[in-house]
Length: 132
Image (cartoon, rainbow, N blue to C red; front, side):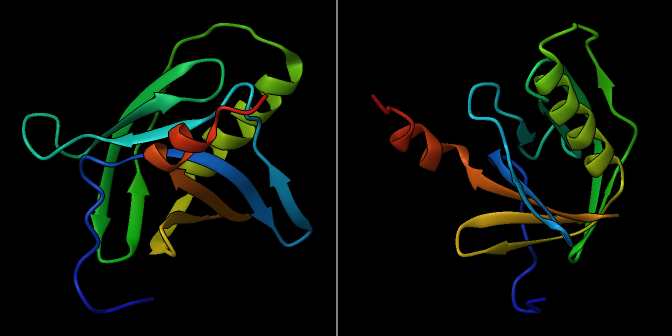
């Protein structure tokens, strides 16, 4: 990991691209995207929120160097399509076991127990999401 400037995630927003495991990459749903937003510095500092694809969630995080700890997540309890629910369960489990993170080529990588979550910045996906 890069030891130059400390990583700053506060105020950033991301959309999940894929789950990467030792058995390969699993593309994230674009129909029901999972998102991750780090609250800006201020009153809500140290908080995350987003969508698992079906349910909204929130929680706390601590970033020390490249070490990332995400506290227990609270989420709504809606029931959605089974495929979306499967992705959401995998996403929430991955976040709850987050260990490290890094910014690489404009993407956020979060290593968790079992693989890596790969995120694109929300602005990059927004500009390229209009497909016929």
